Figure 1 (tube, rainbow, N blue to C red):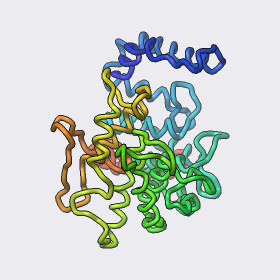
Figure 2: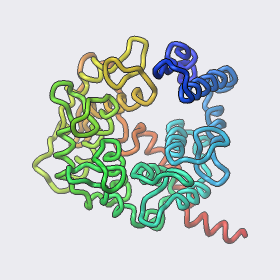
Figure 3: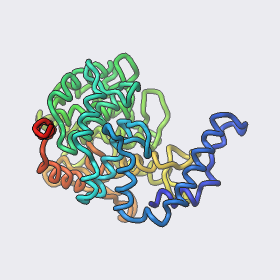
Figure 4: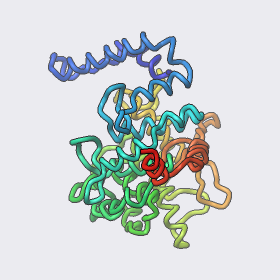
Length: 359
């Protein structure tokens, strides 16, 4: 509930100003902010413990499967990814049992498109984010099936561009966020050999800015703290692919980007005096950039590709963060515990057979 407390502290100080003219957009923003304030007041005393968080997330679960951004909202793959990861982070049996795995499987199957992509919600757009969100929740909860992801890896490969990175859909520009989603999905599906990893590596290393030390999201764009994960997080995944080829490119103690330069950019340029992290100096803090700059900082600090691994901390030792899982962007222990719990539950095929026998 630290998030709600932060909203209460900074609610009036950090309202969106737009161009200072009252427009429909700014009015809608104010409504959303007011709603958050009211939610804080209502749930302040109840939402301090994990069971209450689990109850809230359960209320966000759609009757037909998947999770919405809030109670009674349309199920959305991004919200489903966030909810499942949040429950996995909590890591209790009660949290795991919130997830209706059979309904979740049905929801993912409905989002699947004939060419292998996934749309984000009913009547919504289909892009590479959908494939990543679907593959992540399916693999974490043990509902993955070959049929569910038939054609997905081939569709993802239509999104790799001439630069080497991945676009959201075929024919668009390579982008850090989409590239991470594409490569991580290929690894989840065990289809990473399809990727032109050498072209991808060349593109990725050139996204780190020489002066700033951080990453840009696309060619000829500015540095942005969030790409410390979307781009920096590619290197553990690329390492995992190249290590199987005995590539001489690989280091034994470092990822294939300048970890120290990235850490310095994040620690010096992306922190605010009141807490939270930002895109770049002059920008406002928000939860999105706080999350992904911290995730990128963790990647830059911890190398896990060697026999023993190594840690490289810029500045004081108290700057060290715990390692994250490079595919799921949550703590490694959380992923291990979730896999252990859900692997002991029936698969999606077995759940379907049970439902058929009971009907």
